[in-house]
Image (tube, rainbow, N blue to C red; front, side, top):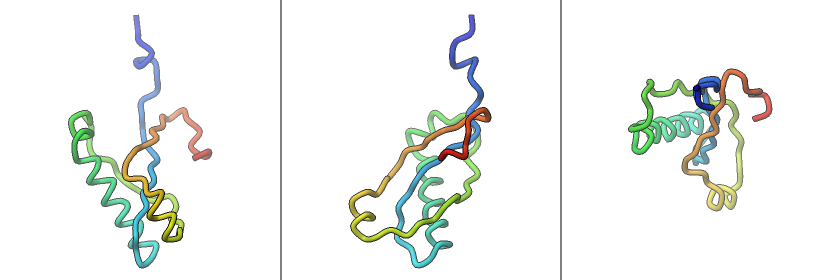
Length: 90
């Protein structure tokens, strides 16, 4: 008998948010990508990831104020999606 996990579509990607301080959008995208790559390569993700490290692309860069940067800075976390998910809602 197959479990629920065996019947699900495989995870093919994820969304995540990082707040960084940078001089322009390109620098912000690079800093955010480096933070995600470092997190992916570290514990505990390193132990549970049986595949390769993700290929990262930046979807959106938004400028925020200093108060938002200091008070709401996500430091980690991912929202995973499968091939069957509607990615336009993220």
